Amino acid sequence: MFEQVTVAPPDPILGLTERFNADPSPDKINLSVGVYKDAEGKTPILHAVKEAEKILLKEETSKGYKPMTGDPAYGRCVREYLFGESHPYLDDPRAVTAHTPGGTGALRVAGDYLAKVHNAPTLHLSDPTWANHKGVFTAAELPLDSYPYFDKTTNTVDFAKMIEAIGQIPAGDVVLLHGCCHNPTGADLSNEQWQQVGQLLKERGILPLVDFAYQGFAEGVEEDAQGLRTLANICDELIVCSSFSKNFGLYNERVGAITIVAANAKQQAAVTSQLKLCIRTNYSNPPAHGAAIVQTVFNDADLRHRWHDELTAMRNRINSTRQLLVDKLAEHNVSGDYSFITAQRGMFSFSGLTPEHVKTLIDEHAVYIVNSGRINVAGITEKNVDRLCQAIKAVVG
Image (cartoon, rainbow, N blue to C red; front, top):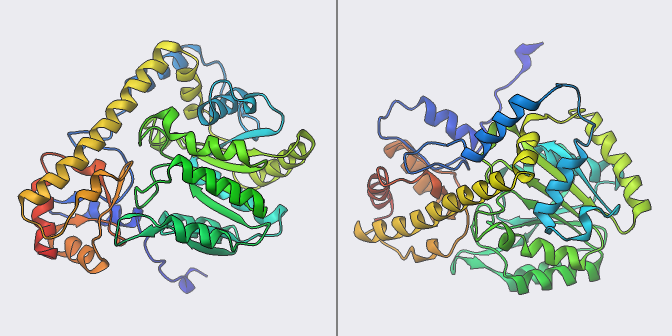
C-alpha cells in the first residue's frame, strides 16, 4: 500500500527549520519560525513559569482527564486576559472558553465547528496572512477567500481597500482578523479602525474570528487587547482563538483556547454542545500541564507581576532589535529605505525581500527566511546582525 505514497511538500515555515537544522554552515541564521529568542539566540523558560511548575510539582494530586473543554478556571483566566478583569464575559453565560492544544488547535476547532454546524460559510483571510491559515481551514473543509490588507508601497495597512472589500462580503460569512502583531506584516489596525471594522461587520451580519497569538508583544497586555475589546463591545457574536505560546514561552506545552460569544445564554448552550462534539472527535481532552502553569501564574500576584516584567523585557528586546536592524542596514549601505521596520509591531517584519532574494539568501548565505520575505526579528542578535546585513546587501545591492 505505501508504495503509492508520494512525498508531500515541506511546510513553508517548519520545513525551513528542518532544512536549517541539516545545514552544516557554522554561520547559519534562522529567521523563519515564529519563536522568541533572547540576546544569546536562546528560547528561554520564563522564571515565572519555572516557579509555577515548582508549585504544581508540589501540589498536583492527579493526572486524570480534564473535561472536553478543559478546566473552567482556565477558561475564566483566558477571558480575563482577553476582555479585562471587570468584563461581563468573565462570568456571562453568553461566553464559553475551551482549552485547546495551542492556538493552531483552536483555529482547527473553529474551522471544524463552522464547517459542520454552520454549513461551511466562506472564511475571508487577510492578504497576506499566516502561512498555515489556509492549510488549517482547508483541512477543515471551509471555502476560503481573501480581502486586501497590506500596501507594499507604503508598508502600512491599506484600510480603504480593506473596508471596501469587507463591505462586499455577504451576510453569514466569516472574516478572520489578527488581534495584534499582524502575521506576517507587523502592521496593525488603529483603535478607530477597529471601531469601523466592528460596525461594518455588525451591519452586514458577518461573524468575526480573531486570531490572537501575540498579546503583549506590541505595546502591552491591556493595550494589545483594545481592538478585540472594541469588537466585543460592538458585535453580539464572535470567535477568538488565542495562544500562550509566545507570551508565556510555552511553545511545546501547546496552550491555547477558543472562546465563542453568542447573543444569549440559550444559544451559547447549543454552541457549547456542538463545540464539544468537534473536540471529542479530534483530540478528545486537552493537555493539562501548560494550562495549569497559566492558571498558577494568573492566580498568584507575585508570579503574575514577574510574568508581566518578563513579557515587557521580551517586547523591549524585539523593539530595540528592530532599531538595531535598521541602523545596521544603513551602516552597511544596503539600498532602500527600511525605516518602516521600526513602525511594525510584534515578532515579525515584512521586509520587502522578494522570493528570489529569499532563495539566494538561503542557498548562498545560509540565511533562512520565509518565502514571503517575513523576518522573525527576535532571531536577530548583536552577534549575527552584521552578517545578516552583509547577506542582504549581497542580494539587493
